[in-house]
Length: 228
Image (cartoon, rainbow, N blue to C red):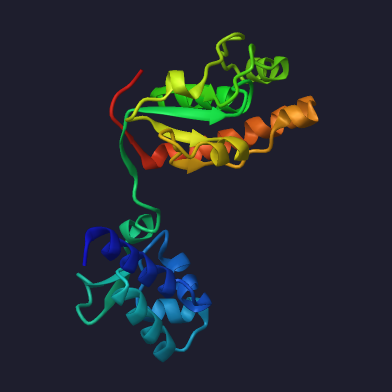
């Protein structure tokens, strides 16, 4: 079994173990401290034989380990394994050098995403468009100013002039994702609604919030090769 498949199998086993409300309650009870099976049964008002069954499932999945008491050697305590919960996240994107965010006109979403990535990670980022506009949209500049981001008002570019072979390309609009089927192909797709279609401050704020949330989710799972 290769490493990727083994990881998927292990994660599936953990998800299955957590798929029962009683087992999830036991994990919650062990999140902040250790407990004996009897204490778990008492606190959760659960029969001891049922606790034993659920603890076995959690132990087999690698979520819980047993330890013998240093006081009363007849007693065991259950301890949660945080690393097992951390393993539920997908494998990280390793060796990322530069991230290039692409949309159609390179006038709003891709610009904001690149600026957010630089601020969040101190990593290298760029933006581009499949049909770049001559300028960044005024409302994109305004929302960037409100959130202390720097955008170059005339800094738009075509994907063919920006993207390199080793870039992590992220399409932040559906059109760019669907158009880029040649040598430049996005590795990730973020379906962020185009704020220019609505052209209100609220639409641009919503796009900013969506992109900020996505950047915050991706950044911890990305191993950067260098900084800008």
